[in-house]
Length: 130
Image 1 (cartoon, rainbow, N blue to C red):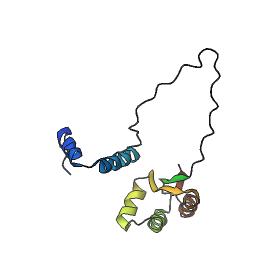
Image 2: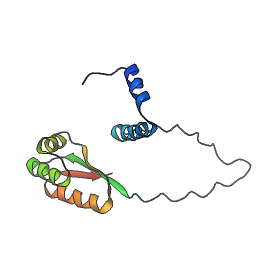
Image 3: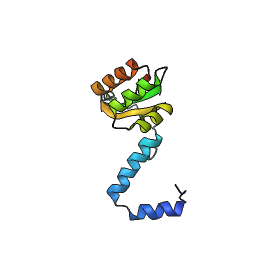
Image 4: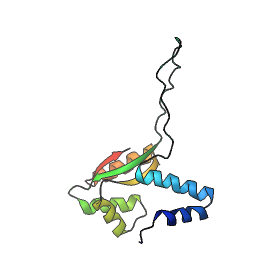
């Protein structure tokens, strides 16, 4: 793939609709683990004896990423399980396993993530839920 310079990228962005550009930004953030949100200034503390507002409890995570951290000794079994869990072909599944740590499934419900984790661990892989 040819390397694009800044002008080429801007030209491509000008041709995109706002919806396409929004989807691109979301995928870019997910791929590189960054956020395009502007930083927010943090207040120094309450002023004039005001009490801080109650902090709402953190929401329970409902979507998880199943991340393969290591293939282990039974690499072929792990590749078979990755193919079972995803729609990847043999080469793509092998490349994913070889390039661990990599996400196998992204943004899946907790029960599906737990099931995938147990299947991969049974095949000999080391797996994390994030």
